[in-house]
Image 1 (tube, helix red, strand yellow):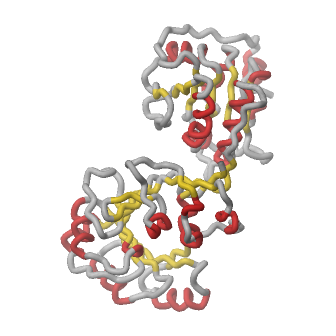
Image 2: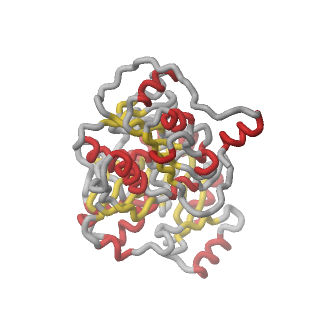
Image 3: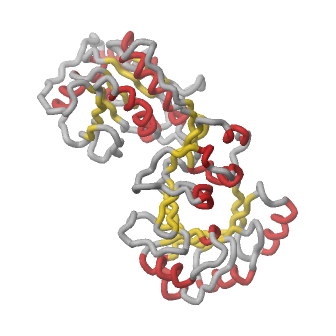
Length: 395
């Protein structure tokens, strides 16, 4: 039973259409759809609306249709939209929704408001069933996307979020189905979404000094494991300027550490290839927080057991895997595959979006974050190390 019917039975009230006063608000598009990427519960919020817009917008633009983002001022802005989140009150939002040709969003008040105006809607559901909380008034012009056949958890803080099982092209195709005829279809196929893809990760090779204002509120990951010879002066100056995390697979000179210890968030020591127990002892004596990591896909059980024995008085070993289980490696040789990443790797004044791109000198040009063709990367085995940070799709 729908929640609205449950409330009606509980209160003895008839179900009617709500009335909301609409007040004019200027929108720069003559024809547009609306998008809201937020909801009152974290588990209801879909994380890949930017990818949806990236795939949907070119098709809409061909028809003179724009995208208007509504919501609260704290909502993350989606690039490619007219961002009006926090700029309107409920009556102005009602006006914008009433004049849109479709509303796209999570399960929230806006989707029900648009539905009551007979506006076409595409809603994303997960912790509640569409039959319980979906659009009620205009079901024939509504599409509710649910990720699987499992029962909903009803957990507002569900982790991992089931809603993220919905692929961006499913959302795009649902929008196109309601707006256009069957001739319009998304030609993109999602193949892999890394667990850390949505994180903005700022990394630097210790071969350049990063300006403290560059992503100043982010911790800088210094990748000493990506270089053979560590320039201690550059390493020291970067740590002096901001909070840092150091990732290394070898010991380095710690004579500077007492002066900048407050800016060292953690040292992650990858001991897969080798371990220097004296380096661990020195970190321990300096009071620097550290962790030891071991790639279980590259090492052996006996080697890891030996290293656990060496570290028994210091710390446990954090085991990790770079390549997801059942990942089809041969897929990377197919034509038409692209990837995008929110990872930023800085080296010698240039920006790279993956460690494979760094090794092969394929830098991000003009400061943007484009979609890269995977076929351009020669060392596919190196690219496998980047999967956790990438969104891979076929276009």
